[in-house]
Image (cartoon, rainbow, N blue to C red; front, side, top):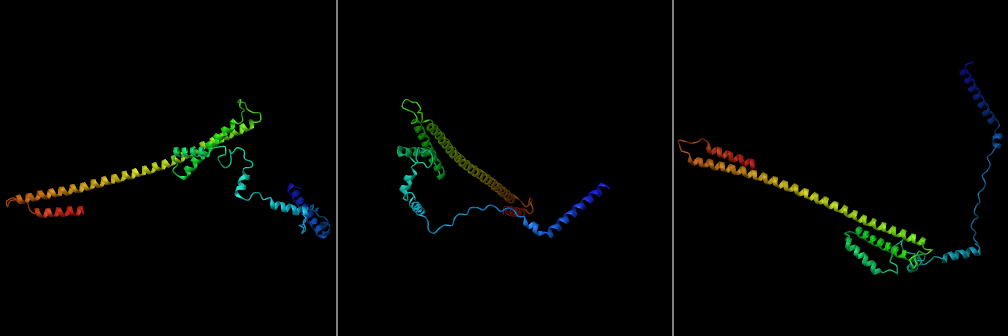
Length: 266
């Protein structure tokens, strides 16, 4: 028997075995139904809410309704400062230990120096003032970490590192705002220079066109003057003619040249 015939007989035997199993399953369905997968474990179900809560639940609900925090704006503002430490992050504000007049004077000096021309530049100048003010505050707070003898207190190294980090942060923010302001002004200057170049180029074109037009007008006037001079000479010659020496059709030739010149200029 060849290998090909052996493979064919093996496939035929497998096919017959599958058919026999299928007939057996159809003949005895109860045996298949007897097997079932194990049921999943039941999940705990929350008890349904009762209409009669306990006294403790009622008391908790009443306390929750009462503890809503401050309601007025002044109370909210006071509560927001409960965890206030140094004011080096978050919304900017001048501390009570600092001078509002000094900050206003610093802001006016920055505005006078940079001269903002639009709201964006004004906002950048104000941010620069705030970051400079906060960096100086961090420097002053660093001095509190040392005792009168100039030695660092044992409990102050973490605070000193924090103040140094905030000083570096605000100095970087100050330089970033300054760079953004400089970049905006450079772009504005480039746009203005572009407009100026375009205006100059347009003026050069108009000047060249005007010169060309003057040149053409001068040429036309030169042609007319030459024609007038020619006609004048022809008339002088006409008066100097004698019966013995006369050029025929002189007048017709002058009129023909005059009409040709008029049609050319038209």
